[in-house]
Image (cartoon, rainbow, N blue to C red; front, side, top):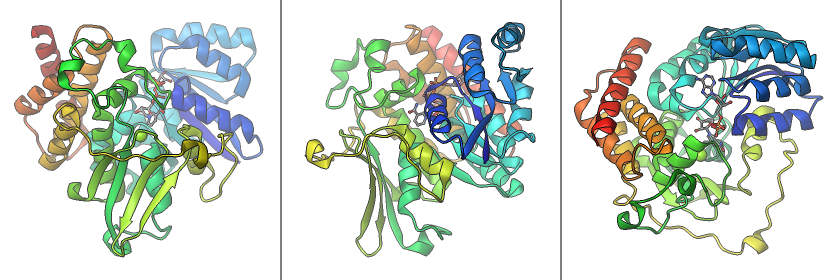
Length: 390
Ligand code: NAD
Ligand code: MG
């Protein structure tokens, strides 16, 4: 029986994970459920899934959560505050941690789970973008394993040999990351001046949280995923290519030295990737509609438009710059996306804000957590200054 902590239980990945837990009560138990401040949603999940521990990261919500849990009879322990997240991620209540908090807020709990040797199911791509080397060192120290939940990385993981050590050793030439192109594929910059948050969040194929939906619309999501692939698979930036594939059926591909290209296909439903990681190395029913290729009929591929979608080019540049440049990229993006969702920043100014932060905030070696957190704060200050002045 896997005992699973779900950090970000009230979000989109949290819901898909809990759907799988409910389908396989003989295999999985959700022992820890954690959320930011959605008290009602968390209390309801606790009544349904009966975890040992509920964590609310915003300590000001603790009393309200205790009241709800006392009233609904869920009977779990309640912990509150950011330190409680770390305790829950590394403590004895779980052997598996689903890191599904959105943004930099998930970094420290992800590191804590890795250091504690948990099986880490990583959705929180911002953590690996901010602190890839640190996360890998924490995994080595803890001796646990990381299984990617991001559908592209999960697909690549499925297409690599089980005994892989490094890409070179198994004859891999390139990783081909597929991108849907988001809701604005085919548009020019002139079309994107007046985009609203509702338009940006209306993804054609996937239903996701608001932050990642905006990232998909700017193609920053693919940029973050290039950096994620670099760390997860030890792949040099030149070996990671982005291919726009509007149907979102091929979730990514691995090209080998002999000319073979292996792909993982399926309907766009995150439960496939999550089920693979939860049950690995076994396969289980995920409740996903089987792929009907005759109905799909076409699989199209095209190059990304890096002039219109500047964020993808900025992510490659930050990855090549190294050090804390990717931490700066991520922090500036989080600030810009939050301002866009708040209608304080135009859509096209997201890339402009990030570019200006990368120009002005110096990159230093990403040697320890303090260096990462300092770079994150400096980039956020600079991004807020730029956004306020625009
Ligand atoms: P979401 O907005 O739906 O949910 C976010 C969750 O994080 C919520 O449970 C929220 O309570 C929690 N949270 C937010 N801030 C927090 C804080 N300060 N402390 C503790 N908890 C906090 O987001 P999502 O779409 O589920 O995405 C989660 C992560 O997974 C993101 O990093 C995203 O990039 C990644 N991801 C998502 C999808 C998807 O299909 N949704 C696919 C691939 C990767
Ligand atoms: Mg993805």
